[in-house]
Length: 200
Image 1 (tube, rainbow, N blue to C red):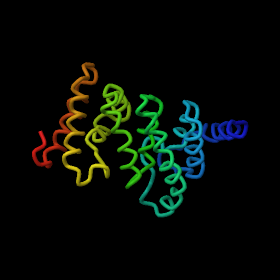
Image 2: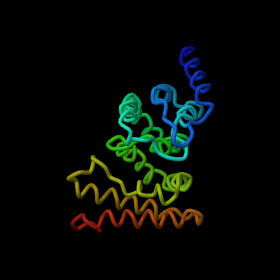
Image 3: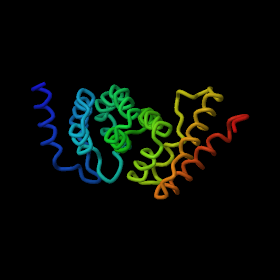
């Protein structure tokens, strides 16, 4: 416990100055912060992770040395996804916020895995989902609502049922301030059902 507290304090100190736009992410520190969050999820440990993420943009994955350096972080986050998923299903707002923030440091299969975790919230708490979409770019983040991922590949009936359940959940949101995003999310999901045979 003492060692864990000391590590968290050290990471807080190191992350006090945010990574500027376009600056290289310190992947080793970010990986350590993610592992610490998995061991002890809290608002404080989430803030450490957030402080090490790229600010105002995405990580530079087109740079070969950046991609190589990010592998440790990718492994740490992959191992942390079950913990983040449980917290999201428990309506933990800080975990939801962190998951959206983590998208800026992910691409490829890991981004898809993270989005698959985030989409669980659509049915669990559609109001919280839309609130965090609004806080993370609004229309730029709304595509997550229709994402299904690897779990539904070649599972057309299950995919149709899942998407329709999301639509029903979103239909239950009556907050006027979220109405535009709700309608856009439903539109995106309906488009995702179109290629599925006999899906209504």
